[in-house]
Image 1 (cartoon, rainbow, N blue to C red):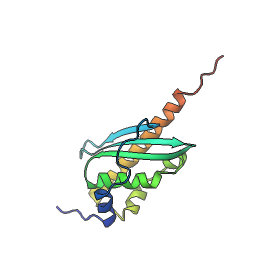
Image 2: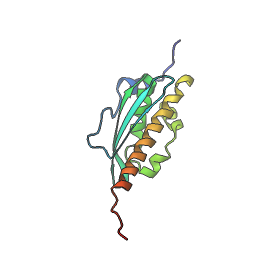
Image 3: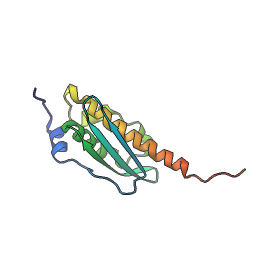
Length: 133
């Protein structure tokens, strides 16, 4: 079976953007798909309510790497609130499409982003000053 990848998918697979880990991230996540075995790890740095930096590590196929790479390019600089509503369909569109059987990779990337944001928000709540009664 041959998959017809677009030029953009191949470019992000062969030359991924924002790959790696952020030391001392403000938020991080690990997500995986037990059916196909793909895994993603995201780390984010937040400043003034915006995603200042985002990086990812992948254990997966070309679509897994390409979707995570495209996602990181698109959400860097977004406010946390805007990033929380980021839709996997945008990744597919920005990559000029994905094979039908690889759409789940874009969904996994967005899930990883949202979990990293949840982790960041949870840390902010945990470190908030305690109010004495």
